Length: 232
Image 1: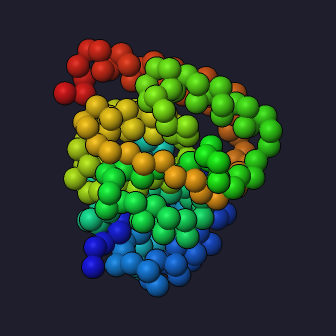
Image 2: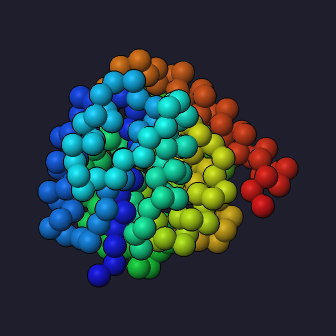
């Protein structure tokens, strides 16, 4: 049986990481030969302490917050699965949606969960939808044409594809998803976008407008990196 690695980046997720791991473990043990890797991105709360209570979960930790992109990269490059999935610590896309992605992974190299397709089920505020559409426009213009939603934190990779891409990845922040798909396209990998269920959970201290501006700057950086040959 093929093995599935699930990567969960976590930064100050002490209030929810326990429930998230309980849910993931319960689902995965019924479906797959699997491993769960939590990458603690320099948390200052009790995230590490809680994760350590789960003996069948691998914890990777480092002292200073580096960004979600860095945490996912570390998790991917330390995984052992034939297929590698990363998901958000709040399970905004439920772990059970992995089954939908797994249906396509034998035909495609990367399967991307999407909140923007016709059959997607999304619970969020209207202004966030509008921000998402504006951001998607610039993503399609500068980096990854035709993919409607690059930012849903639920993506599945074949092992070789994942290692090829993440070994080249440089963006540490939120726009790493765009870079990953940009690199996937440039390396000739087949990418499939599918609709999923998704629910927004508030993260205190994160401004959606400020975050979107930083991500746009990172998208421009991706183009600069490519033009200067930094992905070779």
